[in-house]
Length: 266
Length: 214
Image (cartoon, each protein chain N blue to C red):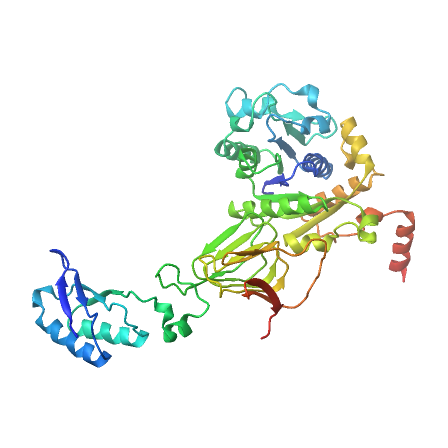
């Protein structure tokens, strides 16, 4: 299988890029893929914390591109999955410590070893963003159903297109179906109407994410988490499975399941 | 009535001065006579024609160009003190197009995609967008703007000061509309969603929006 470099980006901060990277990375590894997650948020690294791997960092991405160590030395193996690795960002440098050219070389090097290379992009559109997208084949844009997030996502998609990444896909994060039903939140169609790109999945708002992030255990590992379920479905779609996008992904409770089964039986 | 031929400097540029002519036919005859008198070694030069404050129509201009070509000269420019747009013939022809400072540009730019936030397009002529203009995107045209989609960003028509410019969109729902040096925005609070094509233009010094009648 040809390996794929996916950059996870959003423009706006705090919409769940890092959470999405951690969960998709873990979910893809659960499917038996060899995955490496690249944290490019130099100076503000988080992915290692979310993955619970912070205390294992010795070398980082800046050490790798500067030739201070080998890639293998800097890669951190996940504690749960054999095929999952993390290349952490440096915390004491800033975004200018890496150039787009170096990033491209790095991702090309990683292609030899891994099926999926997930690049966690920093917020903003400056150097960090340019670095993160430079080696990518495709982009996954994360947006929340808020006008500010959608606006930034629109800008980002434009910049991605300008950089030759015209096949971006959208993940709508932190969807609250109750608010949508009340008409208090943008619904999926409103967002797709503005962004006009393909939808990869919808992740519901889930308190379990906060808990799992704080514990350093991605939510996909918990079978009861609704957000985790959504991420598992997205991961299967990324691998090419043709799963229908279920806008009701956030309301799969017992009653609904019974209703569905009844519908199928009829 | 006089036609002067004044070589401009030592180069090959010529200015033909036809400021004081009565009828166009007279002027043509005079022009031809003078062109015959010009030294044949100057053939092939560029010629500027100064017509003073007389009105010249498109057609007359072309006839003059033809005469020049027959004698082996090329038309460089028409020097005219009178604003070409004040001539009724030309005004009719160029209605709604902005020509800026004496540059005749009636070209139209076609943008075959949607514009996203942060993208900005500028054109001296008209602009047609086959797609949406999203919030945060901006188009600026010297002439008119036609959006075959939803206009949700900023559009500036007649950017060089042409108050006759219009902005039309299938869904006119902009953040701001600008025509020449008028700026408007939708009223605060109200949110009127109109699902028909609309047209914005200046009437009595104000930007008004009306249904697009096709």
